[in-house]
Amino acid sequence: MSSGVARVKAAFKGEQGVELAAYPILGAVTAKFVGKSVREYLTDPAF
Image 1 (cartoon, rainbow, N blue to C red):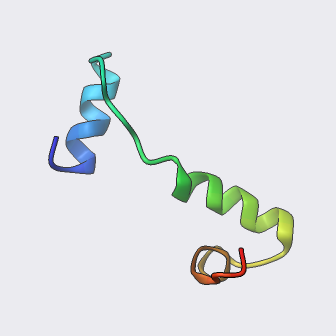
Image 2 (image 1 turned 135 degrees about the vertical axis):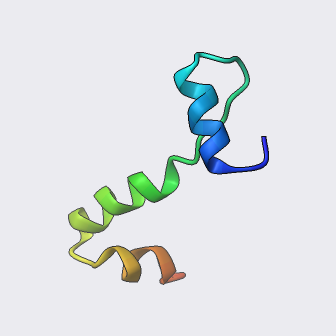
């Protein structure tokens, strides 16, 4: 699949072998735990 939108649609259809990017979602949650903004957390190489 070439785009994220196509991957999400395929996942909702239950197609096998579909990979979704979970890091941005987890990064937003993790940023709150360490007291940083999402931008700071996802762009700071120390994390």
